[in-house]
Every structure is written in structure tokens, then in C-alpha cells.
Length: 241
Image (cartoon, rainbow, N blue to C red; front, side, top):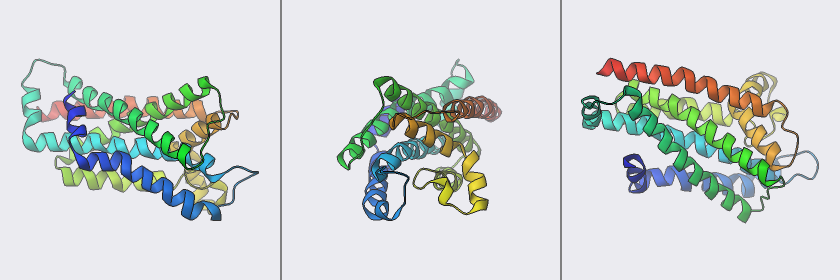
């Protein structure tokens, strides 16, 4: 509850979670969309919006690391460590609050997408699966951000470190353009990039197409990232005690 109240009362994070993705949507759909070749009669809005929702939850997850670093600077973490609670409880609460924020952000982006021409062509089960994949993906990346925040200790360092790795992972993917349009050396990375797998899986569900292995591979990435980075984050948190 504390994490959600902090987010609601901080205009900066509202901008990051809501305004920035809307700007990306309008920019790419109306400025670049007409210049990007897509197979068949697929509209650029139908292609890009599922990926932009994935981008939204990834960038939103970076807030976990920055806010954890801020709590460390202000001594809030010292108070938590003095309480008789599990060391992982504080970090789990932080990442779970991201699920709520990511759900709200995904719904807002879907609404913006609808306004610019996006339509969901799958069934309601496909819709639930798409939302679940987006939330699972954002939750996994929240643990990466939490680990970075515990290592960085300052909000400035956590913000720089978070966006430094997030930008190339997000933009070297199939969010905005098909992987086939990239140079060969970049295709090799984009094809195994978990952001590409998640974007393609949500896009296939949106277009009522077979998901193939993209869905299972995305879930495997999510599970692996949570296991590895939750362990590292809790270990780091205990080391600070």
C-alpha cells in the first residue's frame, strides 16, 4: 500500500508510466507507421500496440530499483531490517506493487491504442492470456530492477543503470519493426531477445494467430529471471543488514 500511495502522489512516475508510452504510441503510429512495411493488410497500430504494452511494463518496472535506492538513502530500509519480518517480504511487496501499476498501465495503453485504430481480434481467453503474459513479464523485470537498486544505493545511479540496459533490450526487438528488417548481426540478438518473444506472443494473441513457442519461451524467461534475480536481491538485502 505504501508503494502504491508513493506512486500515486509522485507526478514523475505517473509521467513515466502513462505519458511516456502514450508519446511513443502517437510518435510511431502517426509519424513512422506509414513508412514501415508490414506483411499483408496488417495495420501498424495492430502490429505495434501489443509491443508498446510490453515496453510500458518493462520501463515501469525500473521504478522498483529507483524507489528501493531512494528508500536506502532515506533510511527506510534500515527501519525494515530492524523489524521481525522475512528479508524477502520487503522486496516481494515492492515487486507485487508493480503488478498493480503495470495492470493499470497496460489498460491505459490498450485504450490509447483503441483510439488510434488498434483492435483486439482474439477471444476473451486470448485477452486474459495476453494480459497475464504482460504482467508476468513486467514482474520478472521488476526483480532485475530491484537487484540493481540494492547494488546502486543511490537513485541517480539506479536510474542510469536501469535505463542503460533497458533501452537496447527494448528497441533491439520486434516492438516497433519486424526483426526481418534489421541487419543480420542485429537479427541474431533480436530473435532471442525476451522482449521480442513477449511482444510476438502478445501480438499473436491479439491478432488471433497461433502463438507457437513464443508464449512458452516467454514464460520460461519470466520464471528464470524471477528465480535468479529474486535470489540475488534477497542475498544482497541480507548483506546490507
